[in-house]
Length: 114
Length: 113
Image 1 (tube, rainbow over the protein chains, first blue to last red):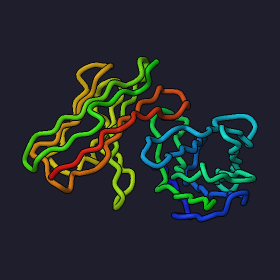
Image 2 (cartoon, chains in turn orange, red):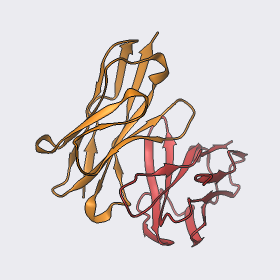
Image 3 (tube, helix red, strand yellow):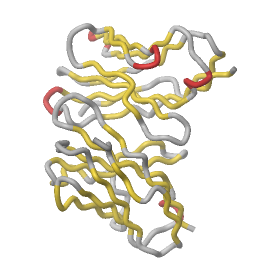
């Protein structure tokens, strides 16, 4: 079975700082990768996804993520964060053989100070 | 599509009472998931269905919890009897068989007093 590890539990940044949240997965086969965002008091929403092609994917609100197959990683980045990016971020992976079922990481809470 | 629809949005009940949470997935999605989220335990998968059939219910905490999916457009999560430690936000999510990710409902905030 696959697993997802998000090493940073809580990240605190000042506005305009650059962001990188780590995500590593364990699975030997082909995978689909996702990042979700959960703003305070809201539900999880899909931020971006990768399932084939260019390993650098761009999502909404200036976020991007890079799939590095050799490192089993799918780190989330944003060059300049805003206070409104304060949220919890979840990485998820689904195997190509069962694309409808994802395994989620434990989440990283991002706090952006104004 | 209106997305995944959950009801009620908020539920306050007394310990010992039966609670039923409802979910309508996105039409055409053949996977449905029930999650529970708390500050202490984070996001937990309780059970999921594929084509209305329960596939994995290993996350259901106790026999007090049960879930059904009588048809492709409706699922329920029932807690009987409810206890204060069941207080949480319960999310329903659905997905298609392709790698498009999940769509989550707005959640039901359950408070058991």
